[in-house]
Length: 93
Image (cartoon, rainbow, N blue to C red; front, side, top):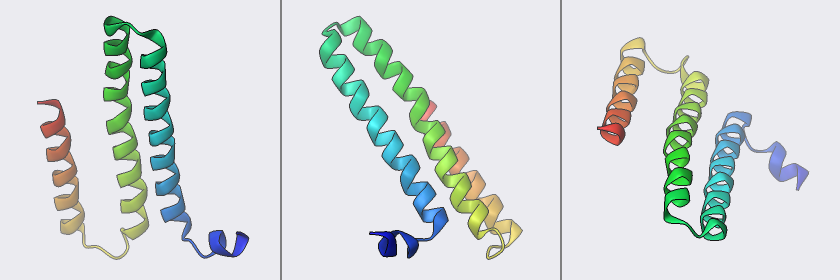
């Protein structure tokens, strides 16, 4: 197992770790909704998830972009940033 983990790039491991954390939070929220068994409380839990999801997305993208900044030109990084901005606008509008 250690050989397998040592072969994975730390940036990729960090990004995957954030996605595992996101999945754990989503699963916990789903179980919480079932245990609460109330629509109003389930909507409140879902609203909290609506804030957490984009934060995980932004953090994952930031980690990935910071690791490849030396390989990309400044204009490409700006286009990527604009694309991420459009995704977030599409989510919230």
